[in-house]
Amino acid sequence: MFDVLIVGGGAAGMSCALVLGSAKNKPFAEHKTIGIVTHQKTSHLQTALFNNVLGLAPGTTGASILESGIQQLAEQYPHVQQIDKEKVLEIVKQNNVFEIRTNKNSYLSKVVVIAVGYTNLMRIQGLNRYIEPHPRSQIEKERIWLKNTDHLIAENLYVAGTLAGWRSQFSIASGSGAQVATDILTLWNDGKHTKVHDKIGE
Image 1 (spheres, one colour):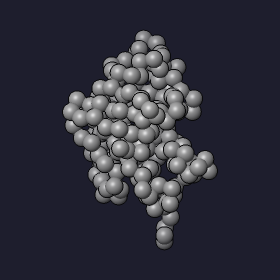
Image 2: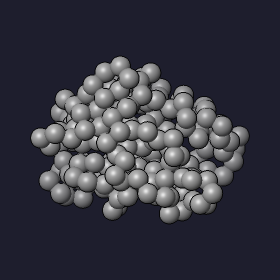
Image 3: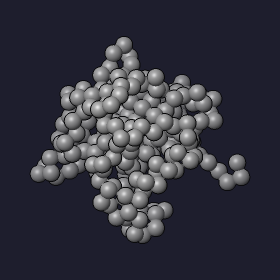
């Protein structure tokens, strides 16, 4: 049983996992079980080149970020379970718990974050009723979003990144994932607004 399971290992999903993982020493998060399904073959980062992102050296590729992000998460926050080489096929909620079925396994989680791409090829069963045309993309591209309010689709079901309705920009997707993480931390912290910062000397 996960306390939160993130679906998608791109900019939004990995940012969400890193922020959640970084809260491990907080009393309200220290015993939480966090997982991320890192399936990312269709991530737009695979072919991205970044010259305009603060903090990234010009020429940084999206493919390298995907690789280094997995390594960073494993080294910094090894308690976050990475589920590799599995694709989520269906998400079903029963008795306030989500069952996440992949092509290989089935998992249970109290909270789920959907952070996959916004193409109309998104085929996760159980989410169809939330799909609408993307509000910030050209109609002819047939992009989609999961209708939400401040990243929340339904109780304990979140969406992050382009699928949340944001434009396809790396820094926007990353920020969206971090926002969802702080919302979940706030939920765990009995509704007290929560963020996590590391500081030099601490």
